[in-house]
Length: 358
Ligand code: BGC
Image (cartoon, rainbow, N blue to C red; front, side, top):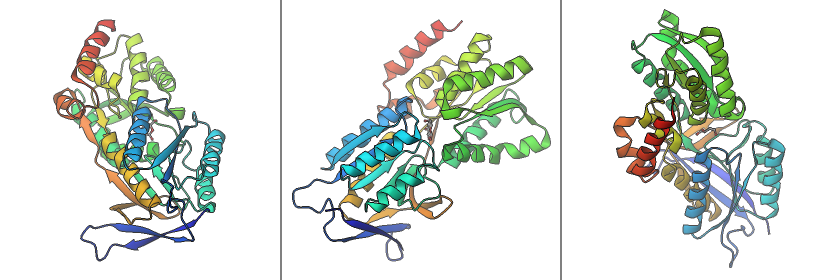
């Protein structure tokens, strides 16, 4: 029988851990409380297009199973109606907890209320669901990622703190893209106000598509030729599109490009010198956090969330991890040491990609 699960957020006054305690009360028998039933987690992904979502999915699935629960996962190919259909199917399959990576952070408020109507708590993974009574948010500090990208750019311009830049933001439908921009703006604002940094071209990349990022840079080059110093790209996918446009014009390696995700191809570009940096967000932290919290919620165990994020409607209890800047200097100590990519994958691939460059 479907249990109505009510999540109550209580300030953690008695706990040594600062934060919020989520606990819940079931009326009648909870799904996972059934005698012979393992907890069942539903995972609804926006997309598997970027390599990061594949490793996130694999790690969440692996960890949920290691914790003795089952999991059903779906990917919506960046389509809101497909994602709503996926959530409907997961609910019909009697999941105990829904983990969702929304395609459109506003549109998926509907998925949250559908799950709640069936008594199912919802965890937003990586991207928040806005304007909803979301139960939990597991992510990295996205504003901080923007700050790290902006600060890296400012510090590594040919003349530090001065120059002309192109900015590529992510998908307008993704609240992370807004938070990244906000973090970047915090760093850039005083330089822009003094006229030390000039944004010569800026645009949003629909659905974070590399081909859109490429078109943005093509348009910038048509307008300004090579008269710019750097591209502040919000993730590795858009950085890849930007670098393709630079390569076609013979500028690859001559203009600094930022990124995010520590995708293998981006790490190879960093070693080859066509991308300057990326942001590593270990899925071992984020995915494992989400898996553990989901299984705890399914088993009606108390959950501690150390932070909160306002989603436009409520303060959502949140578990936010720290992002790491990756450059050639710490590639070995970060992504390689963690086994996220092997040394050979990064360095042999880098040599191959450098040979291919014109
Ligand atoms: C994620 C990034 C990812 C982007 C595109 C964002 O919400 O935080 O890691 O590159 O979506 O999928």
